[in-house]
Image (spheres, rainbow, N blue to C red):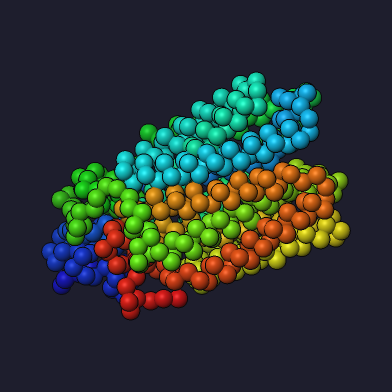
Amino acid sequence: MSGLLFKEKGVERSDETRSLMDPRTVSSTSEAVDVGAVEVETDAMNIDAVINLLDWGNFHWLLLLQCGLSWACDAAEMMLLSFLVPRITPVLMPNASKSERDHYGFLLSAMTFAGIWLGALIFGKVSDRLGRKRGYLISTAVVGGFGLLCSTAQTMEFLIAMRTIVGVGLGGVTCGVTLFSETVAEKYRGASIILSIGALWTFGCVFETCVAWFCFSLSGTQWRLFLVLSAMPSISLLAMFPWLVESPRYLVVTGQMDKAVEVLKLAAQKNKVRLPHNFKLVAPKRPAHNQSHLRTLLGKKLRVTTLLLWGLWFCSVISYYGLSFVTPLYFSFQNGNEYVVTLLSALAEIPGMVATSYLVDRIGRKKTKAVMFSAGGAATLVLSFNSLPFGVLTLAAIVGRGSVLGAFNDLYVYTPEVYPTTSRAFGLGLCSAVARIAGIIVSYISFANESASEAASAVLVYSIAAFAGAVLSMMLPYETKGRKLEDNDTDNSAGTLEAGDERD
């Protein structure tokens, strides 16, 4: 019989495999592949079929940790700004005027985002040309190395220069997301990306808040220790790279079939899946050029989607980083403990993450973003009324930050799904680059506040951005839930839909 036959505990499960039963998926030969308790009759499959057969196991847990830890590093380095900027200028510029200190404080934050903007463009290209693993390794090394150098700064100019380069490295964090998304079966992709990004990002935020609380509670100036400890997550992550694999999908579309088979066999071994000795992968119908094409992203099929995604990423950064940066200042004006509130807000990201991971595979990527953006916008709007009781404002900050992060995490699921492998990292990097322009704007809005009323006005801007994100989410032309990743711009199996394909 042509196709796949699944048997688990003696029960035939052909209904789950109809999507794989086509000429592009398997050959019509009858060599058996034992997948735990599952028997499969085939000897050659395409990359989607193999990844689905590998299901989820120890290989994916390790990969989740290796790729997801980049988000803990990213969170630590970004949260660093909210604690460092208000404290560093009096130390390195003791004789400067207040306006000059404010100017350099803005530059410290803005140039970090400018570096991320540049890094997102650079590492998007690097990842599509040289591989996901290489791009990820280089970016992590830049963050860790130059993060440590920041602690040696004697002047604001040197510190700003080092933080700019750290930002360039942070721009490559999307390489890890791309690698992970290309190696996980579709049914696990949404929840696993959201849970890994959300949980480890929250860990990074909590870690950084605790480090700041510890360092700045000590007598004397402990900002150098603060910067050293903040770089430790990236340094620790570098130790895991010898065991990190390249994306098998990337290897397939770039013609490196033997290496792809090696990675898949390793995954099968760790997941306790037996593949045949002469296991073969079906090569793509058309060899993909190892380059990214801007015209693919702005071509007829993806132009509207790309422009809407740029708007969504822009709104996400405005609303999320705005809340993250302004929370310590906002609650210091309320005479509250900024560390406690920031810590609670970071922990509040956990229910937001769980809610998003639940919704994303049930109501779809688009509606999930709309729901989370709307909830975040409503909660953030409450913060603009700074005369409300402290407990109400704290609850609003918690709900707002958790909801907006949930929408942001959903974008990290949707964006790689809608772009082809040949341009996936570049497309994700370009979205991230556009968003960092918003980061520069946020830096000015957040750190220029000198009173509770000014902080409340800034929060109103973040609320408007969140509501705008909800509207843009529903304008997206395609729903990617349940779709396979496409490999090149001629493959219509995923995001670039043709007439007659399902729209939401």
